[in-house]
Image (cartoon, rainbow, N blue to C red):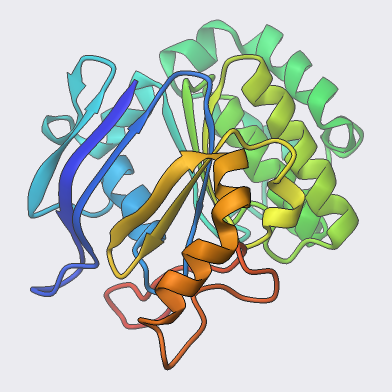
Amino acid sequence: MLRIEGLTSGYSAIPVLNGVSIKVEEGQFVAIVGPNGAGKTTLFKTISGIVRPSAGTITFEDHDLLSIRPAQRAHLGIAHVPEGRQVFPSLTVMENLEMGAMTEAGQRDWKHNIERIFEWLPILAERRAQFAGTLSGGQQRRVLIARALAAQPDVLLMDEPTAGVDTANQHVLAEVLGRLAAQGVTMLVVTHEMDAFVEVVTRVVVVDRGGVVFDGPRDVFLAREAEVLHEHHNHHHDHELYDSRPSLTGNAEAGPTGRAS
């Protein structure tokens, strides 16, 4: 479904990603983890067209994604939920969701789609007339996920979807995303909250220093977690590969301004 081959990408002459290859099959729920600056956010930005690569290919279904303008990629079925609370604060929850339904599929299936979204995220049905900017952090994250789902995507790219959300709500959001994956939506999630996602992801990709250092089924990763950590900790004298739980870390790498993005 999504094939990335030899991808080199970044914000300057020194690439953040260097020769990355990943193949994602339909219906997989992939967790992408790794340390700060590893290239996880850059990967998503390159897939969605925010960053243009200097080498490599990205194929989505039978489309050469790099030949398609970023604005058109959403119409192919790719939705990108960036890190942070990037709702339209002065619009209501319902108006935010309508803004997401700008693709042909989203407009065609709006009535059915909104019913499913409210079934999956009932708090948004209750708050549909409330201004999105007045919601809590966790509720705003739900709005972002719902807005992406309103486009009826085939692939959902989510950067730290549980960032800034309390532990209980992290598990709730992960469970919702797991149900979506079970219904056929392909998921790629950058996260350092693997505890919340460990029961729902099917595959783990570890990115470090711009390359893929592990790519395999969740159970294989969990069995080899200590080995992966030990191997790459030897190359990271100045920082840990992961944070509190070994397989969890990974805030976004620095963008063109040098700030974490």
